Length: 254
Ligand code: B12
Image (cartoon, rainbow, N blue to C red):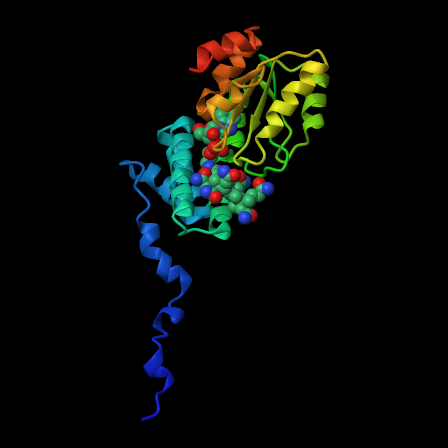
């Protein structure tokens, strides 16, 4: 008897919508808070739902304060990273999540309010070729809110633009963020270019791809793994602490 298409293949999986297929895995994103309002923020980031993040952030700012909101946004993004690493999320979902995170971050930053006095100047950037700016944006918001002037050069910044900004603004601190192994080598180049210009200042480097070992392999480099430490790095640099002393204070590899 002749076989039909139905005999040779089960096409059911093809007709399952992608979003239906990933829903159970998405639900597997860990709860990051026992507090329902904070959990709603994290869930909004995981879902890439700007409205949900906005609404929950308003509620949380009224009762918990901006720091709790920022910690929760970071925790939500950590779950998104896991979903990406597990192959559940692709670029579109991650872009929606990072946009949703930015909605909460902007509100939290507004709530913190920049203090009027400027305690020092910090030049911040993401490495040449690198567009991953979430960690840099969080650190920038916290540093600004703590009364420092932040010159945010954005992402994918050429090395000479960073050097020029440090020079022109007489910066106390320069920071770099890199999420890709292919882009972080820009930091060593910048440190070298600064040195040739006769400029020495602490250069705080962070981002997923970056290791303490790498950052402490070139002069001026001080490794950072937490955006919340940004204001303390800025305060150390503005008080005149050398990069060597900052490295000894913050890093294990000296
Ligand atoms: C979000 C994301 C994206 C978003 C970026 C959106 C945005 N506006 O940033 C989008 C979808 C656009 C994207 C694109 C790409 N991505 Co991507 N992406 C990610 C993902 C899922 C999460 C990264 C993230 O935001 N983490 C959360 C933040 C908060 O972490 P963070 O920046 O490291 O910051 C923390 C610390 O490092 C520190 N910190 C950082 N900076 C600073 C600065 C200071 C001063 C201080 C004090 C602290 C500090 O503070 C934070 C914690 O508190 C990772 C996966 C992963 N597991 O990391 C991949 C990942 C980084 N991406 C990757 C890749 C390859 C790409 C693409 C090339 C994909 C492609 N094929 O097109 C493009 C890159 C384009 C480019 N030229 O840059 C790879 C990089 C691999 C590698 N090691 O080289 C990763 C690791 C995924 C993977 N496993 O393959 N991506």
